[in-house]
Image 1 (cartoon, rainbow, N blue to C red):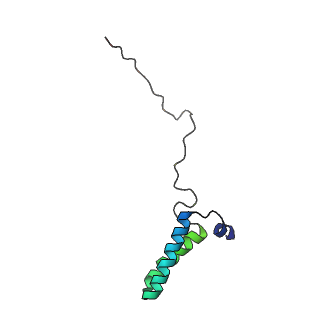
Image 2: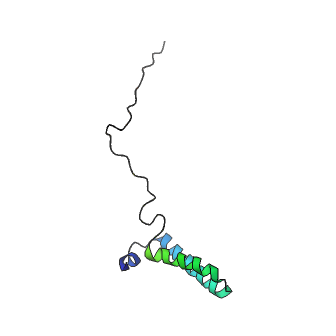
Image 3: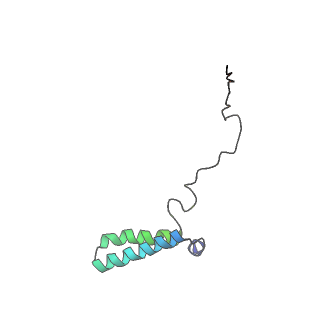
Length: 81
């Protein structure tokens, strides 16, 4: 778990952490305690590197197999006059 906090930092992860810290300070300053729950989630997600695309789950896998399940394309020769 400590490795998740210290490795793979990029600009988007830093921006999410900064947004979470900003939301937390604004929630405490204005007294909107419901927003602190949302801000805490926004701080925890970049710290632990979790989220929708953190593990590469949003990537579309490459189709590299050309087995029997691939459709063969049949071409028809067209003759011009």
